[in-house]
Length: 370
Image (cartoon, rainbow, N blue to C red; front, side, top):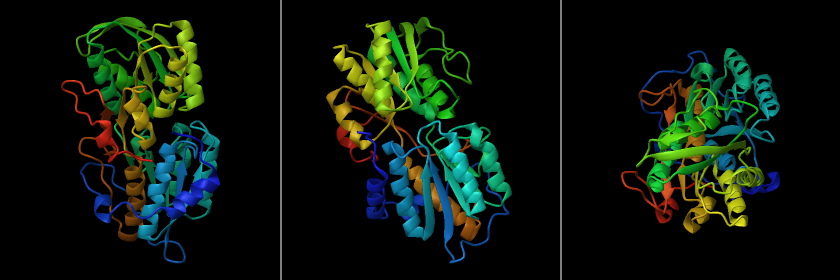
């Protein structure tokens, strides 16, 4: 799973993609604030088609490849011209800034972005000042009003679900924990939200609500039956298999008795599982994403549980939103009580725990992405 996909293969896959998302499911519903601007473009490109830039974090992570596939399918269905670009990593802000500036200079009607962080906010605001509509996917900007609307998972809730599941699975046993984050050189909201959600779910204080790495190193976790815990290692993985494996190897050198591993995403979890297998070490491994190719690891037990999100839905809704803003001035809305549109989360595991809603691998195969 989550291997690097070449641009050529990616283009072949996107050309072969059919319209998988029905118009009815793309309706801009729910209630809340953060209405779109009233003064956006009144028509599409010179040929009458709406022109949209989709700016992803990378092409190497199947999560974003899934977004591209669904966005291309929705664009084909709606008659939208979609131009797709991505950086080389989750922290490649320079590539995203260049893509935003190109979209502004090119007179695109809209920009859809999976933001690498707040460093792109000023450029997105310039796009809005130029009359372009902006939609964020997956990562809620700070402040949320940076864009017209965000379609995203509640990443804190995703982390909270796997944290609660972990606490229940521990059944009161001491927890020796490794936290495998995305980065430690920048603050990315998704990274912080997932990490803090996991800690909240297992019942450990987060320390500083704005950044990772400030939770108390030891104490009592409050989730499930409760018990003692120690955080022995917290390292970045950039959300990749090789760096997940390397980080886990370092953690095991610090303490070979680690029995709980939180990973920011499934590639990092797969790398961690490889290191655990090499060391003949057993641990509870939990992650977030919900990719179809990850289900083999959930089925084998090398990854115990994952909180699934729905990136294709986010991307298709984003394309629909800009199309409707341009052609109909239809205002997308946030979900009730939130500052983004929540596209949902679901726990995939073959080891259900009492009181925690989950779906087994057989059911997950009908719901996963990629």
